[in-house]
Amino acid sequence: MTLDRRDFLAACSRAGITSALLPGILYTLASQAAEGQQQLVKGPPGHASAWDKITPEMLDQAAQLAGVGPFTAEQKKMMLEGLTRQRDGYAKIRALKLPNSVAPAFVFHPQPAAGATLPFATESGNRISRSSLWKPRTAEAAPARLEDLAFATVTELAGLLRARKITSVNLTKMYLARLKRYDPTLHFVITLTEDRAMAQAKKADEEIAAGKWRGPLHGIPWGAKDLLAVKGYPTTWGAGGFEHQVIDEDATVVQRLDAAGAVLVAKFTLGALAMGDKWFGGQTRNPWNPTQGSSGSSAGPASAVAAGCVGFAIGSETLGSISSPSTRCGDSGLRPTFGFVPRTGAMALSWTMDKLGPITRSAEDCALVLEAIYGPDGKDTSVYPATFHWNPNLNWKALRIGYIKSAFEPPKPQQPSAPPANESAEDKKKREERAARMQAMQGRRAYDRKFDLATLDKLKAMGVNLIPVELPELPYGSITPVLEAEAAAAFDELTMTGRDALLTEQTENDWPNTFRVARFYPAVEYIQAMRARTLAVQQMNALFEKVDVIVTPTFSEQLPVTNLTGHPALIVPNGLRGADAPPPLSTEVGSDENTGGPNTPVSITFLAGLYEDAKLAAFGRAYQEATGFQKLHPKLD
Image (tube, rainbow, N blue to C red):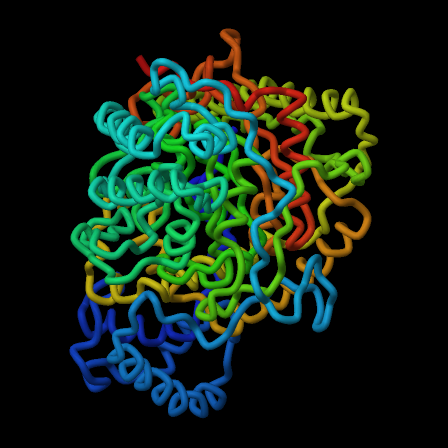
């Protein structure tokens, strides 16, 4: 069963966990009265006098929404002057027209306690040089047909490039041709950076020929999720209304990959403002089954890597945006520890949850890319000065491997609701449809569980002594609205001006409505949720004192938990569903329920302690060497 942010927010909404509301509701209620509407107005005409006077009756309504009170008449009388003053101050902040690039004056760090010793911490914070332990594989003869390398790993390509058995120029031309060939079907490109790419490829060949090899990414074509700024090209964020936005800088990650000699060939699709796989130009598709979406929001990077159209890509995750498309498309994705990779020049969605990371064809490739992009840049203050030491020869057999026991147990069967008395024919039909859908979903979960259990069996066969563990018990679903509150602040102008109508998706669970709802999230409740998040960080850190790596199904409770606590996750392919797999719930092209089915990939996820990303990748590499699932790729022609 796959999960992206839209699915998760829908589940949260059904559970009622987004109902906490903010004191600013008084502004909303007064604005509604002034405009005679039942929705958030597009914004004040410019001064507070445009708003109705706050009344005790409004305060009663606001208290109901915020879940506080009731207040006595005397209490309300005392509150009115302060609330009016508070509301009048909103306009002054809004008049600043804060751009998305301005972060709040606080920084989230997932360290469990002040002064805690974390892996590989350095006093200087300097990035270490490329590991001398990694060596390119012995380069065999290049294939007669260069396109036979389309699905090669970075490690394989690096060996051929360094030995000058292929050229970066020809490799870049090959990948550009594949991007142009398959984009009409898969819809993963927003902008080709062809001129930039050819200039970089030519320079790479010249440097390698002169003996100036920069490392394993030198001459490798790659693609960026289009929330990363690239000078001279649009940075669209996948969203209507931003199609022609140009940010005159290169994101730090782009700069670092340039320095590593990598060749940027394209800016790839993302769901509008990093939700799902639907963007202003359509829907990005799954190379294994192009009637399905590729999932999101790193939709284009995952699809293009799986289709053999780049050597690697950079995606981002806030709550599943590397995990979900990597699973759907059969890629290896590494969501780094929060604060490992600087986000300077990247679109902000949630300042305390956004993470940039590689999407590749192997765990080792993830490590090689992360090694090029991690570490402080002096601008993103959330980045912690930890080092990354990639050792492909790490003795993984010495690691303590845990597994989340409850996540591998069979799900409890859900029983359909009993028919009510005097049920109408229409209601009966809907109830029966829900029951059939529930049964189908249970069948899919039971089928996919076989792959999860096979992972445990394989690990035991590899000599791993699995240690059962459980996640700390905390109300994680009630903490996740901090994401929505931060996202609503990041894109407040869209809500206040009505430009949110330009976004492609407009359902209850899409950003426009989510932003409006989040306007009512109280500042006090946000802080309380962040305090609960501190407990989660501390308790997860205690768990990783008992084990080094945790094995878990990708789409389980760990996904929101580890995104909140900032722990790294490695998502790896775990086989293909067979011909006997339950069919998708819908066969409609692009439907959110058109997922899974025969010959589509499944995944498994490995977790590790904070800043233990290199150890995580080394264990993932060992698993892939034992299984070979990373070598599977779709047949596109």
